[in-house]
Amino acid sequence: MRKFASLPGFSNVAGLYLSLGVLSIFLSTSLLMSPDAFADQVAAQVTTNLTTATSPIANKAGKQLNTLAENYYNQAAGFEPLSATFNGDNRFDDQLPMTLVPAVRVRQLAMVKKVAQELARIPRAALSAADQVTYDCLDYEVQSLLAMAGFNDRLMPINQMDSIPVTLANFAGGQSSQPLQTPAQYELFLKRVSHLPAWVDQAILNMREGIKKGIVLPRTLVVSTLPQLKVLVTESAENHPYYAPVKNFPTSFSDADKTRLTAAYRTMITQKILPSLSKLNTFMQTDYLAASRSSSGLGVLPNGAKWYQALVRDQTTTNLDPETIHAIGLKEVARIQNEFVLLGPKLGYSGDPKGLPGWIATQNEYRPFKTEADVLAGYRRIDAVIRTKLPQLFGRIPKAPLDIRPEPEISRLTASDHYSAPAIDGSRPGVFWAVINDPKEYPITEMTTLFLHEGQPGHHFHLALMQELDIPKFRKFGGNNAYTEGWALYAETLGKEMGLYEDPNAYLEHLTDELLRASRLVVDTGLHAKGWTREETIKYLQATLGYDEASALNATERYMAWPGQALGYKIGSLKIMELRQRAMSKLGTKFNLLSFHDAILSDGTLPLALLEAKMDRWIAEQQKI
Image 1 (cartoon, rainbow, N blue to C red):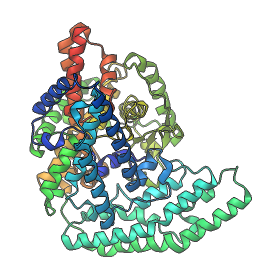
Image 2: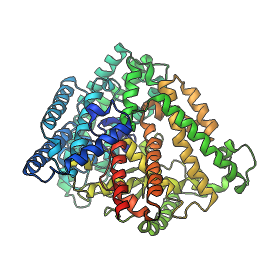
Image 3: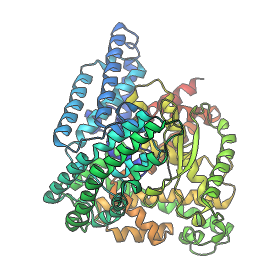
Image 4: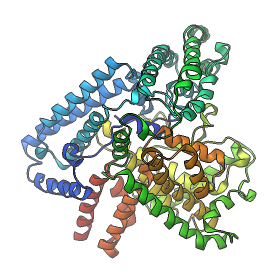
């Protein structure tokens, strides 16, 4: 089951990275295939199955598959209760994930193995075409989880991007995924928080084991994590972030409920939470910091090279190796920089084209905001314009609304602007979270392309529409990074069709953001496969993107904390653009962009090989019309 968290430290990308259950098909054989051979197998299998998909055997097999898929989702949600909460599944709102405990991890792995065995007994050839997609997705997901089980991610349970104590603080604020509107919901959250000391104890045990085995975080990531933990060690319960629900009681609560809950929260925080978080903070500041490593990449750890290669496959749903991806990144960087040659003079810039992003960052005219409200109003104006353009490019518009909110203060320093999906029950909209640390430094030029990616038609169209599909829950809430971020990056290019890039300043920022995603291919593989240091990566980002040192450092440490996660954006978007060009070439005047987009999104998240096979069939069908 895939996690779409609502706030980084627990952003949707964090959930995508951590759950490692990426979708694809025929994993047991496809990992040894080229993508082309994989796509050929898919097409051949579909042709074979057309004659059997409506038989009584198909109905029986379909029921077996749907039952297995439902059982898998429910069991997976029990092991990952935060993920369930993010998805709007509130059955586990009083629990924390305890998969750091070896015995729990064993049970989770046994569950996945059993699902894989039961799935193998279902005759895939007898399934309908729609059920075959579900079969393939479930097969890949469980096989991918099994493939990743041999790596020791549990020994590094905390970093500046991912931290359950910080997630709980964001939940407590009342704007995130955990509902806090009734006394019963307050009690569920309090019970969830009560499990934190056990989680902390196991996290410390795991990190001590990691110290012995040489599997520890880079020192710079520990240093970046410490301020977040320090905020959670307050002098009194009343000043603690977990006490926020008490400060924000709904007016509907009775005086008796307020009195009872206030005492319960104060007691829990004072007697259990503060001692536990103080212990974690002390351990991180002393033992763990002293044992942390000076290296930057995953490749230097025991079995690190194989670990990184597995993550590359997981995050891109391809068989591309790090060296090939590095080369693609360098080629894309050069291509985009060549566009700066023509664009620079239009902006009044006559220097080295490579310096254009750095130059634009120094122009104060592009920082017109004075308050956080000004920035949010700017995004709402962009959203209003985009809404008028969407019907020209999409036949299906999400039913779930999209809201625009500021990132909570506790996670602003390490978060990036991001999106969280709506709750499946409609209780929470999709949300674009704007990270506004200093409104006066927030550049207006970046806002259009960013909102196309994080808002609509990027993540919101993909994730909100996926919830409307008649597919099993593990697919509704599932995904893979290459499709998810690839679609959002592709969505940025639609600013051209919408006329939003006629302003050369807005187009420059679109190119700059595309350059960032291309640079990620270079630096992520550089860090984790080619031995680049943190300092080398910072210098590359400064030289290529015009970043100041602080921005380059923040980006570099993100890639250090999430090996491979940054690769999915560009690899996925290149594939979608390739499919669009193929469709345009083969269909000519029959090509319809609206229909193409609806087809891309019609099955939800797919691995790239399955997406390619599907779209080739779509092209063939359009040719017959």
